[in-house]
Picture 1 (cartoon, rainbow, N blue to C red):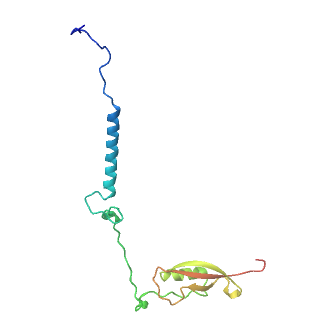
Picture 2: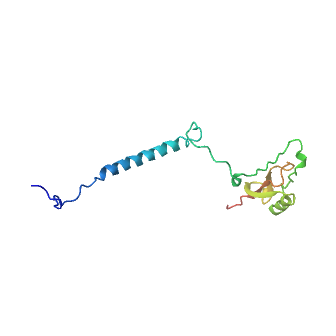
Length: 152
């Protein structure tokens, strides 16, 4: 029995192509490409010699990162060119602060306990000491005596 040319012997689907082998091939190629990119970037891009640490050199400094530093150089040969700290020992707090301010110095007050009644509410010490030649913006610490009263 011969088959007639118009007769269909198989009415099923035509033979299909399996996709899973192609998916596996594409996955392996993508994985290999990613690994190659990682290796090239770790080695410094291949355009420059790799550094000993494997790190790329830092980018050049930008204009915003550049800072100006001013340095004051003071010599010991000319201390007289600096102002001298005036003596405020024995003065009351208000007078001592005004004297220091008029001489170009800032002041900072600390209270110390004294036993002598003559040292109560007056400057009993100062730092830097009077006569010291220091920059005008130096803060002079003045120690104001405070006498412990009976019942304190």
